[in-house]
Length: 512
Image (cartoon, rainbow, N blue to C red; front, side, top):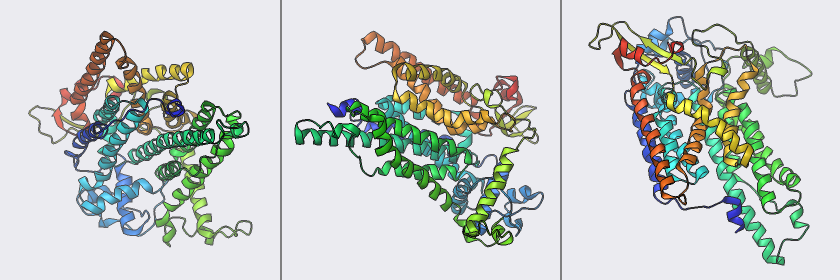
């Protein structure tokens, strides 16, 4: 009884619990790997991250490239790289992950440049389907979540392009999944310990109920700390997730202790769960982050590597020189990010992201193409499936109401995932920003949409007519979403199509 109060109805998913997520991930994998080498040139910010990844394979740190290096790289001649260290402002993890694909398939192969991005994009579909399954207690809703992510263009384009953001999204999603596992583990453990106390004395004593039992080491939360460290090692915009997810997991513990009758459940959760949560997440993430700079630490001439030796300071000489040098590197990079404000034709304020006011164009070509028409186009546009994105934006309002009105922890978790990735951008209104940054919280937008679809679908105990209408509405929405994705697929995957067909897919003037 206590376990049910803590965890709710836990139905066995059986073979379908794995088969359906794997199937939707395979569907997503096909969409991501077929024609992955198109376009056959570096697109958008691949010009930075792919070449940095190649540099990692050569030296373990970033080196400079000559002017017009893209043409040489595209032609399969990356050997033009220079010997001097380059100044970059993003950490190493995403670039090392890109480098892994290049190590397998060669640096002159566009498939190799994008291989790891496609793998990570496919795996994120599987992870989201499994997470949704646990959140909603439904194999069907888990499969829908995975399918919607698999066919959405925003996620698809990122999975077919080697930018850092798809790796950031992946590690954040993995951290969230691990914390959901930790929540279930901790509640099962709490139920067992409380039942054990009850068996000893008939019921727990007043003293035992003051703060509740200590739950012991929590491996899933430690693993989440590692994942958050890897997310931070991809992009610094992961930092809010460390704070928000850390707070979220402690709030879950507070609710659990309150449920089992702990009298001082706030203090009990803070002292017996919160301190351990901090140690499991923050220091673990920091140590993981530092470990991602191993290539820089092992080098002698990476950018700023010898800064401490060149700038002695008696006040700080007790700090190991490599750490002092890395601190200076970070200070410089932070200053760069803080002052980044330059005009760009595809910049988009955060206010416009949820409605896709200004999607980013990664690639567009119209010259020298053959498509059976006088004017042809080839595009890679980071525009999502409008039905999924606009539906998810509206769903956030419903999720917010259910969190405030019913204190549904699932609604709170979804909102936390969106807020940590979205709201911080409003603190920097003058900074140049792009719609494609939204990929980091897209899985949580999909979860918000599926939350509402679950409400429409209804429960198995509902009257047959209610259940039938719910199935028709949800099924119709999913089918329509897949058809809309099929319509937009050519401008997500660089297919050559007539110009008028490209314009037909530009639903808003701001998309051009």
